[in-house]
Length: 86
Image (cartoon, rainbow, N blue to C red):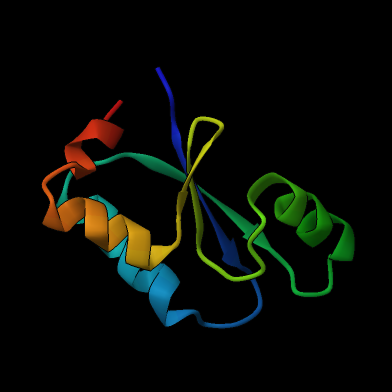
């Protein structure tokens, strides 16, 4: 089973991260949150290599990039968010 992983910042409040986590919780989708410090250049470089994104949240289903909050909300609007349930 693939897991949903959401990368969020550890040292500042991110409204899109808060909304993404709330949406996942509302839909009953379990996720692991990995917080990344804005000072950790190595971890951000790895995330960029993995996703091509420099923004947060970064949401993955297994190794597949879902995207950020906008993409997550779009899946919800088309009733495809349930496909992320493990």
